Image (cartoon, rainbow, N blue to C red; front, side, top):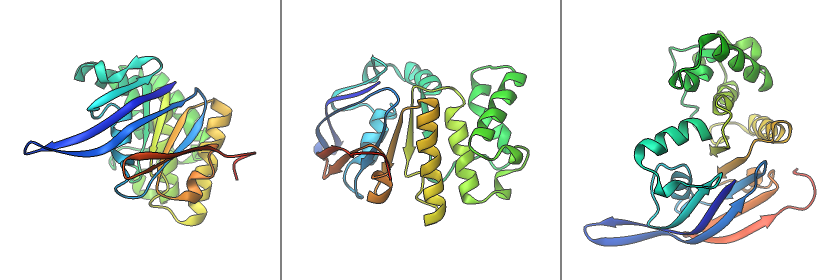
Length: 230
């Protein structure tokens, strides 16, 4: 599903190279849920941007469903992201003047999907994430946890190959954080969706079955947890 192969990255400023990632190598299988754990400055945000095709690596390769995304043109990458990659953001990134349903439908609008099918898929996913009755409200009428559920539904609407969740509980209280991680784990199990959760919180990371930890741009741990997630 996802293969990061001997990946290194550096930024160039005024002819000087600043290394950020060093020889990162790991794979994620279809239907797996993993955490990418690291503190600020560990390189996890850069790695996320590379895996999502928002940047190209200085060295190495990233394959999603066998496609080496670093070899794609910008137009090819844009199309690939629209159809194959879902995103969940810390700050939800919902459009305030659109209803909950319209926010979830939006990726399908860009694909030219007919309105009836868009609505059916959006309502199905909103029910799946537990807020089907909120479909015609606006984001400002929802709590933070409910807005994140909308973001999760939107990330799934194109039936992507993989979903990247960037600090999905960063703006939530402890109780709501647990509910959102419970939901992601349930969706992973029932829909066989592949998730990569980027987080700086060990307690969030340990809820997944496997943790890839970065420190100062190096992969320091790739650990599978025994038994069921907590």
